Length: 95
Image (cartoon, rainbow, N blue to C red; front, side, top):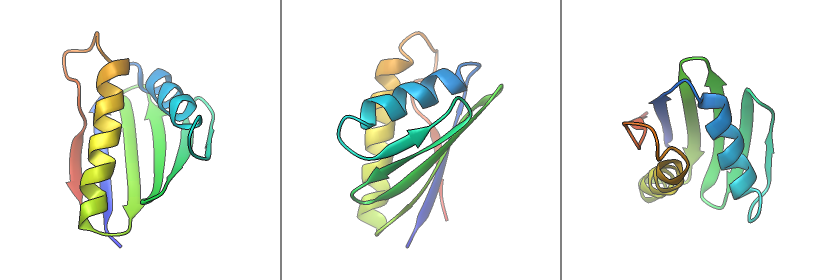
């Protein structure tokens, strides 16, 4: 099972973590506080953590196709929430 990690440099990591988890919580199971959370997508679970320097998302998913799906769903939603930020998507790595 591949693991993918994304980092989004921002001073608003906690804000975006909470917005993402609240939003996804309307459709899938989530849990979060201001500094960490998780989202149980069909393709795998994403773990989010926020610091003063940014937002990190680490997801372990079913296969390579699911890696791209996680990237797409997180980036699409982050782009909406972070519309005032200069960068709109995460920098992703796959292990």
